[in-house]
Image: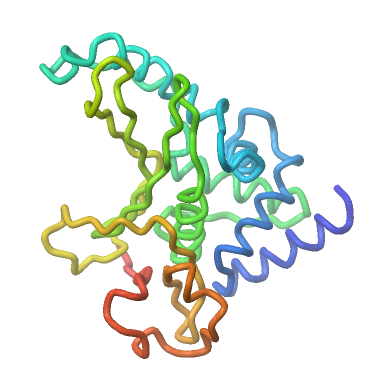
Length: 241
């Protein structure tokens, strides 16, 4: 590993431990770590998203759902009548335990032995929060259809896609790529969802992460979230399970 990459992974680890990183730190970390992770691994997949943001046409996510969307295209009406879809080939990027283990493996590359005991650790939840908003900027090419990845905020924060049937317009198959639970625990009803595509994650002076619209990015954020109007900042609450 070159010294530049080693240095920045080390810097990211310090920010990770202190919970001082934001979405930009996460993006740079993934880009630099990409070439030092095995092909077919989650972090190689995440790095590929950043390398091909407008039209990603291969990788774990697409291969995970290829059988499902092929079946859906050929059997759209049967699917809506209750036909069982094929099983997902593998976990794609949805398995947070795999993300957790892979993150620790990257730290190990620079000699840092760090264990994340639970997916509910606050610093790991910060990382996933940044990751979801980062991936929400990209598109997948599935069976010649460009599919926008969507971010939805509610009781949980979800990363999802909706694939339209190739043979029956306005017939959609939706599935989650990643889910972070307990983001807004007081959200009632729990099925409330706010589309937050076009938002970026920043760290505020109270230590919390919050998603803000792109047009507000660049303003000074050395202020508490409470100084913003309602429905401008969408925070990640420190929720302990």
